Amino acid sequence: MKNQRQEKILELISKYDIGSQDALMEKLRESGFEITQATVSRDIRELKLSRVISGKGQYKYVPPTVLDVSNSVRFNGALAEAITSVDYAGNIVVVKTNPGLAPAVATGIDAQDNNVILGSIAGDDTIFVVTRDEESAGEIANDIKKMTRNPQ
Amino acid sequence: MKNQRQEKILELISKYDIGSQDALMEKLRESGFEITQATVSRDIRELKLSRVISGKGQYKYVPPTVLDVSNSVRFNGALAEAITSVDYAGNIVVVKTNPGLAPAVATGIDAQDNNVILGSIAGDDTIFVVTRDEESAGEIANDIKKMTRNPQ
DNA sequence: TCATCGAATGAATATTTATGCGATTTATTC
DNA sequence: GAATAAATCGCATAAATATTCATTCGATGA
Image (cartoon, each protein chain N blue to C red):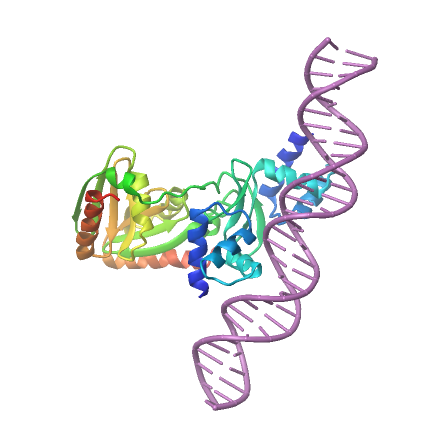
């Protein structure tokens, strides 16, 4: 139930401009979720949504993107937090990050100068790391995962 | 005075983790700005700061730049029309688009959140989609082709 | 089946944030 | 410089959000 509801929340805020938890609660009730503002507040915290000020001066909930990177740029710190998923197939490791941070994270990965990594390319939120073979891809993927689990 | 103060606010939130307007007011007072929470609230609105939830579940004010993603793209007909060709080899699907549109199309492809797709990277007019294996590459390529034929 | 534990939730409330309004300061025009 | 307009801000309070506490619900194991 909770998962389903949080899915719906993401759907709703992408579809409508929702500026308060009460408004979101209303929409959820229209969709058949009988809940209170307290639960909406908790869902918002769990989904890490933020209330931002739009151009027109209106408030609006938006999905999380980047959690502050301004300060520390050590790879093991803030940047590791930007990684949202790691997977691999064949000899390619695919790393997903928060929007815009892929280049920064890729720099960190390249910096490891592992001779198993042939190279990497970063888009906006995705990195392909080409490794020498499938086995190394698995190892590299694992290494990166570890970093995301123990940031800092 | 106001400008100077707002400068200081930006400085403070980059330097410290500030989680409430009261806390920010405190810091400002330490810096010699005798103001109230009301003014802080107004400054925050003008600076378009947002209060986000950090990894550790703490609230924190951050500058706007990073957050502004307001309008996420949906994979609609217009985007499907931008696709000029689809092919695949191994576990990689290669999609060509009209110049400049690859990132937008890639966002749409990613949004499908198919667990067969590991991820994709877009250049200016080309997208690489990495799939779990060769078979799924064929299927994905087909799916994408269908979309281009019947852009809804 | 029952007891137990933990997650999920609502009700009530605390905390935090936004704002209407009037006072005061600052800028502008004559 | 006086008159007027505009911006800024504090106070008080409204509005919005977070959290505490108690309860319920579901899963798990005795």
